[in-house]
Length: 378
Image 1 (cartoon, one colour):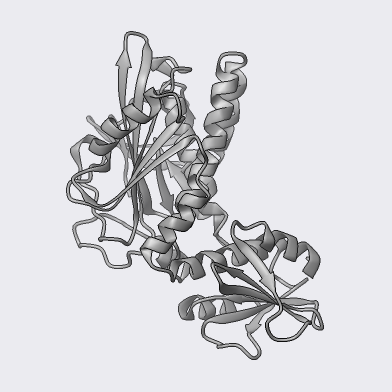
Image 2: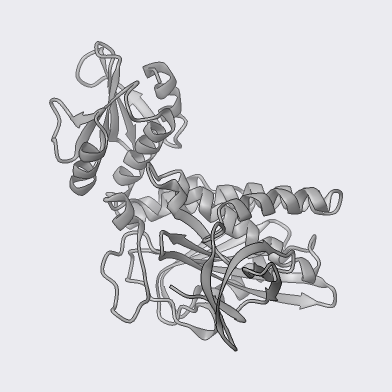
């Protein structure tokens, strides 16, 4: 890494500007007027980045090339030396996180306004402070937005869902204004109903890519738990629920509800094995940076899927499938499973295009299960 390469990367972050408020040698990088990074041309082997107290302590303990920031508040700023034990990819992740930390310090109104500025023209966005369920809102809002032809997708976001839903009637617990709770609506007419799992895979892969770009270490701990939850180690970070409206042999509308734990750090005792990004990263960040990144990743993957599914369906399927299987929770090794009849040992052999899970038993035989027919034993 060198300062010019880093400078280009910083300026590629939407809304980033640079100026020299102190001396001509000191270049600061801002988003919405607030500094999140600084380069001293006279010391071209390092960069100063915004941090947070817990995160600062963790980075100082983990990396020898992360040191207290000279001339800056040493609890909220770090210096990262080039060429040490911080890789270029990790440095870019640190910079992106600094950007997200600073944006997270603005009011919600300011964050939403900034988010809307970067929204793709084909995406309809609706925000509400409180609702019963974003899934319910998305059926009405999404149908109208997608049917008009002016929008490829609609996104309904709420700070608080009074009756947020998970899989098979479960309740999604989320503290007001702390997490991402939203539903996307799309009209995937390119897919046949029997290929609906491709849409779930697209969502799961987009979520995995969004989150992984913020992680510095233990990236392998971030996985997709069959069929579509996101886990960090053995803890649930994100849940997804999909509902489809099918007319004949054609999708009319799909509503994809997503709950991602972002800044919540205290959960009710009845919530099983939760974890949040704030706990993983050691800092609170802007929820809307994550939402923007997710919509970007999903939009690209969804466009690729639509473009290739009719002409080269195997290509579209295999690309998603390879990424999905590579990052699948407990995809390597033998683990304990439970079905309606027994508890047994097995390894994951495959996930079929229908979404069914194929397990391989120690004797080499295989069993195939639909969702909810088998469960992991932790």
